Amino acid sequence: MKQPVEIRTPYITLGQLLKETAIIGSGGQAKWFLKETTVLVNGEPDDRRGRKLYPGDTIEVADNGSFFIRSNQETTD
Image 1 (cartoon, rainbow, N blue to C red):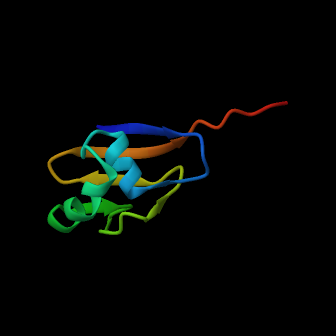
Image 2 (cartoon, rainbow, N blue to C red; image 1 turned 180 degrees about the horizontal axis):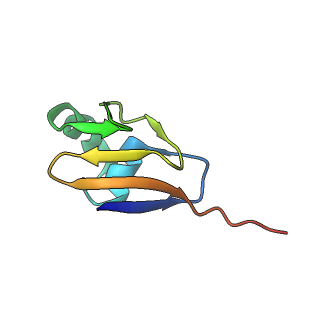
């Protein structure tokens, strides 16, 4: 089952996602983690920690689960 990751900004980077979901402990670990672990973004392998993820994107991290990006932007009327 895919876990939702809610963001309040237009996008989140892959490195930020890994940190927010507690897959890695710090942003500095992202580069090494992505070199050693298969990560699929929308079904395509990606190892760029700066990859921008937008609402609707799906991410699969080997041995750590699946996630999807959901917007949680507060709207003011």
